[in-house]
Length: 167
Image (cartoon, rainbow, N blue to C red; front, side):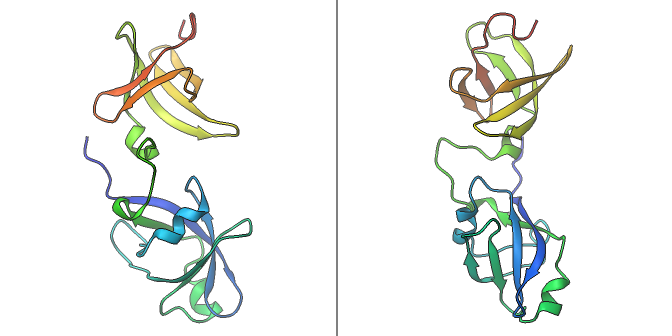
């Protein structure tokens, strides 16, 4: 499966101040990720925006982009989705982009039984929930080390479910 090169990382939800700064609803594990990104896009590789400053501290990160200097200019970007190239997004080696997991087979580590495909990753505290599409309907499973044995982006998600989980 070919991986997406440009990933949705957030949405511009409003302006901030009078000098063109924008309030971002960040869709990353942590808003700190935005600080390492040197190029943002309004589409998959289109509409490049260069950050002049990225402030993270309140509920929403604030970004000031090059060439956008007034509240009126910034307002034109409200409700736009912003993207970044996957190579600019820093992530630990043991982490995965959600878009790379969607559609993977969910496989029993011990028996090789394929239970279904990962349909979605729901983000809750204290952990994510995997929504798995099976032939009998959708099943929700906590994405915790007790169930997830291994994730191989080429082969699938290997799990060790408790007895009766998929029955």
